[in-house]
Image 1 (cartoon, rainbow, N blue to C red):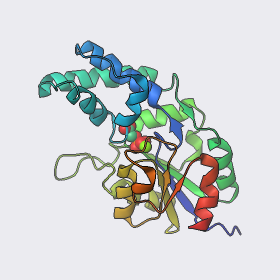
Image 2 (image 1 turned 45 degrees about the vertical axis):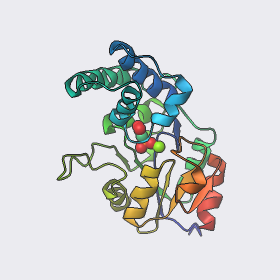
Image 3 (image 1 turned 180 degrees about the vertical axis):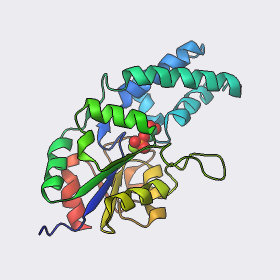
Image 4 (image 1 turned 180 degrees about the horizontal axis):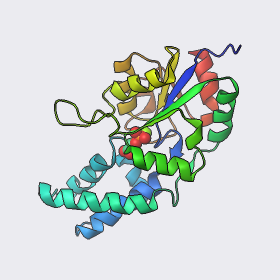
Length: 227
Ligand SMILES: O=C(O)COP(=O)(O)O
Ligand SMILES: [Mg+2]
């Protein structure tokens, strides 16, 4: 019997387990180019990640004056089509992710992914990287459908985190994520939240309101033990 304090862990994907910005940035730039906009410098695309692909493109388009809704929708479709073909060209797990997942698995910890990426993309990327089998569930931004307001039940809403906890079957559950969306979702679900300060944090990692900030993947298990 392991003395580890958690029986289940939920993970955000982009900026927490996987370094995805190059492929996401390329998809945004593909769409921007088709729409006649300037590309975003690839490094700055990190600042657009967190709310899912649609918000990412909307932020980039708005920075250049915006565009009518129907044209935006067409461009967004083009971005998704591009990303479907190129979602793991440059995407890789952060250093230390695989040993960390191994160690948790050896302790009998159940793991799930809760991302604002569409479920099919998250599953594809994790499958291509040989990591999909590690998780009992891969919950995407569209997995729970839309709420009464017509929006997807995605982070910062707590439902996907609560759903992950339910699938994992344990109340000894903690969440790990890199953005304010993750912190809000975890807080709403009433679960502890570790902030991956090495990811695409939308603000000072220490100011996001998590329980603890880690600056590398290697810091996660010790941080969880100390919670
Ligand atoms: O694709 C995004 O913008 C966010 O994805 P994440 O929830 O895995 O960070
Ligand atoms: Mg993230």
